Length: 162
Image (cartoon, rainbow, N blue to C red; front, side):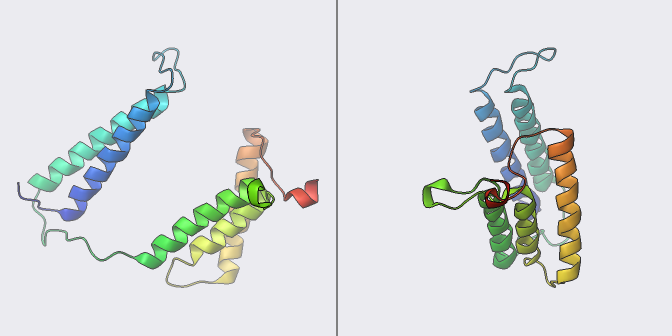
């Protein structure tokens, strides 16, 4: 077996792994039928599609010739750290951590924190542009999740709303 594109090969394996995990996890829920879908239907179909996509990508990496073998470069630790940290902080801000007395800060504060921390992963950081992006994301998220979908989770910090 001769790998002709390392990036595609390992990307395909990742897709297959995540797809199989989703499909396997979906078996814990009622799947239902196409006409009456259960809670496990969508994750099962998503997992199967991801696994099939992974198989296709992995197969192509073994068959299609690339110019330099598409070698995998070194890990970009700075972006990896800031993107993971941004997601963890967003989750913490959205729900809080009652066991250590960290209150929920809500959706709006969480989105601002997420945007500012994630923007540190890039090459350049411009406060004005990030603030505009965070404001647009906060407004659109509020409209989508609170107004349109009517989801019930904190929008503002608990010390403001009570």
